[in-house]
Amino acid sequence: MKNSPKLISNYEYKKLFLPDITTHNLFNNSNLQLYRIENYLKKIVIPVNPYQTTFNFLIFVTKGYVKQQLETSVFIINANEALNVKQGNFTATLELSEDIEGFFVIYENEVITKIALNTSHLNFFYTSPFSILNPNTISWLIRLFELLEEELNEDEHNNAITIALFQSVLLKIIRTENSASGLINRARSISFHFRELVQKNHIKHKTIDFYSDLLKISDNYLNKCVKETTGKAPKQWINEITIQHSQILLQDVSKEIAEIAFELNYQSPSYFSRIFKKVVGQSPSEYRLQFLKS
Image (tube, rainbow, N blue to C red):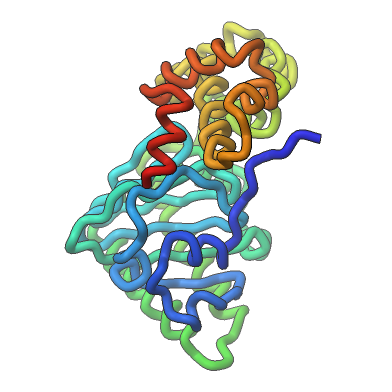
């Protein structure tokens, strides 16, 4: 059976990227955790190679900026902005400003299941995970984050209270975005579901018609919806998501590049290398060498 890239756990994330983390925080396995970015991420090992996590996290910046890769996009999260990263997304922290401040919230999927969000809220939140918030919303959210932080720091904190506070955080962010952008439309919904399907099926299926058949729409309509909402054609998404997958596999130096190419169902190692260079800007061997040096 072919191996997929390993999703790293909360503990592994801290161990890999945060060498100066306290023992208490390292072994904190609560399903909802909140840290100050300036204390938690300040000494993160940069550059961080792309990874996938078993948990979700929300980055909320109040001062300075964080540069974060999410799937095939790179976001610069400035003050008054937030980014949600879902379990299984390809992501990496690329840069932190010297004056960075804000909140970093780690939450497990079970936390979301306890939050009463309707389908449109969930679709909108995960389709457009980057939020620019107004000053009134920011001050309200900061007060809420401080209350959540205070409750989580209690020796025996009340899980129902922390879930309710985080629910309020998410609803405020989502509804602020909804009021600014309008409800999710059909094209954005199709684009979202297409990318979810690609994440699950890209190794075996790299043709557009496979996904349009699953979505019960034509190839042309799928192309129109995805291009209109993301600026990229479906084939570009399929290539980029598969190459992100390969970047994680390339970090395992025991695997030959040709082995990875065939594992990802490319017709030949040379074809894989051409697609990789087109997406990343360097060959697989150059990427691996850069990874080893870092």
